[in-house]
Image (cartoon, rainbow, N blue to C red; front, side, top):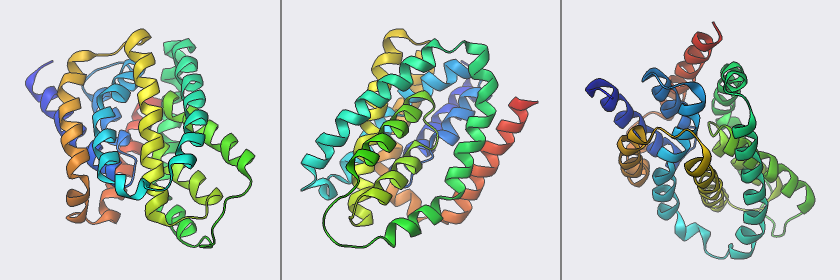
Length: 250
């Protein structure tokens, strides 16, 4: 790895950690950066999962106060998330590399669309009734399983998906839903990390550069995000992801 590539990956790791801590979608920065550094799509995907994990840790620690009183809910959804993440990680490793490369542009476009729609998702969540109680638990776990499977298979956009799932099925404040989302995405990423570290083509030199930067970004995500116009940040990431997707498709 040369100096410019290392600088690119370090910067992408920091930004990804920051964005993931605040709103999700950071993999739309770090994954294309790995592609730009010359890594094949499958290697870039599994390496990205391992590299951004510290950022999820920092982000979850930062919102731990909003997890108070949600232990039973977290434990119940954790079991579903673990099963979904294991399924997604195994499917990824069983898919031929050329097949994964072929679907990456579409996954990127889908994740970019989800990130672009995040304000709408947030408005829907904030508009939910504030009454106590939960409902349609079976559907919540089915949707959570699907979100976890997607997150392990291709992490870009998983935070947006999980926020939408939890917001639709849980009657809770946006801050507590976001904290629960952070904890579950950290768990999904942790399961995928273990599977990929043992069986996947992880580029450990890239992980060494990005992981530290991702942790720093996760810790400082809130303060960094406050200095940026959210609309500009979201639009930049979406445009970048679409450009990468088009380039890969061609």
